[in-house]
Length: 118
Image (cartoon, rainbow, N blue to C red; front, side, top):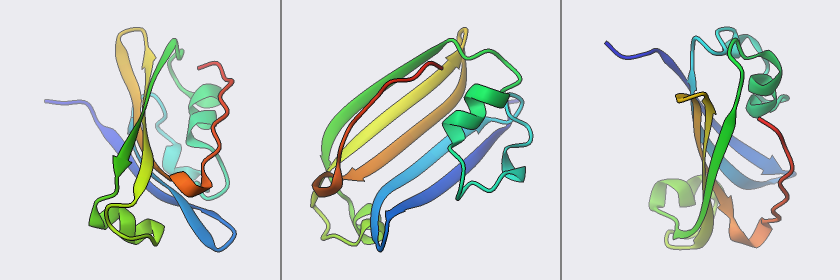
C-alpha cells in the first residue's frame, strides 16, 4: 500500500498571458490541510515551509530546455514544439519525499531567481 498524495495542477498567469504550468504531488501526511487554502493566492512551497508536519531538509532542482507537447502548448497558448523550460523540484524531509513538482515555463516570459530555504 502506498502513501497518500494530493495533486495540484495550476496554470499561472501574468495578466492575460499564461506563463507557467504547475503539476505538483504533495505527501498528504506532511500537509494534511493543503486543500483548505486558496491555492490561487498562496505558494504551495511556502505552505510546506511554514506549515508542514515534518521538517523540510533538502530541495533538489533540475532545469532543462524542452519543446512543448500539444497539451502544455495549448495551456500556455503557444504552438506545439515551442521551446520552454521545464523545472523539476523534489523537496525532502530526511529521505522521505514530501513534494514533487514540475513547472513548464514559457521561455519568452522567463526570469529565474532563487533564494530560499526548505
